[in-house]
Amino acid sequence: MELLKALEWRYATKKMNGNVVPQEKVDYIIEAARLAPSSSGLQPYQIFVITDKALLAKIQPIAFNQSQITECSHLLVFAAWDGYSLEKIEKVFAKTLAERGLPADRMDEYKQRLWGMYEPLGKEWHATHAAKQAYIAFGLAIAAAAEQQVDATPMEGFIAPELDKLLGLEALGLKSVVILPLGYRDEAQDWLLNLKKVRTAKEDFVTEIK
Ligand SMILES: Cc1cc2nc3c(=O)[nH]c(=O)nc-3n(C[C@H](O)[C@H](O)[C@H](O)COP(=O)(O)O)c2cc1C
Image 1 (tube, rainbow, N blue to C red):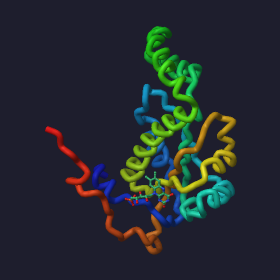
Image 2 (image 1 turned 30 degrees about the horizontal axis):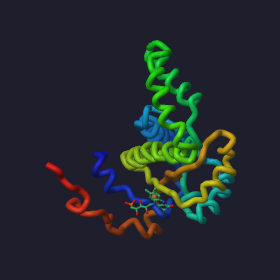
Image 3 (image 1 turned 30 degrees about the vertical axis):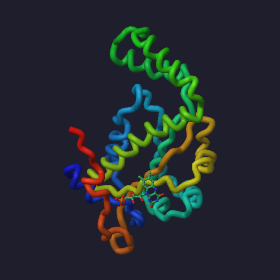
């Protein structure tokens, strides 16, 4: 489906019908997220794909009992690094250089400059910066889902520290950022389905500087 048509078609589905999304569509959506750009190419985030019904039932109260959590087919949890470190940056750069067949020291100066910038900013800034990168992947996943005619509800409505605890994210150096149930709209019961999509008018949204 053409991108703009897909974006008009999609909406933050409030009620899903429980139908299962084919694995190839889930893979496509995840691949779009994996291909997202990120600052310095660090990709400081991961996606957890949850289909375990018992686990979804435990997540639902953490997400203010939103029904999509248990009605969805797959729940994507976007989790970002809880902080940067020179070791983590080195690991990413080493992989990039190895895959490109370039000398391992090719990016040493850039790496040091990057860490010199990041280190004094502190762990809270690091986590926020990593979360911002995760949102780019999240946006692409939303668009890819729409293109695949898969419904998706972007969600910040959950208690992140509780989800982190449930999924054991702290031990992995991760924090949950945002979640995305994937599934299919319940056409008979979703109150939002037929309501107009409302957006800021173009003239208020865009300022042209010529
Ligand atoms: C970061 C983010 C967090 C959101 N959190 C929730 C949420 O927890 N639950 C929900 O039902 N909708 C949530 N929404 C959906 C928005 O309310 C919705 O995208 C917005 O009103 C625009 O409507 P549309 O997506 O239907 O076009 C969220 C959207 C974004 C982008």
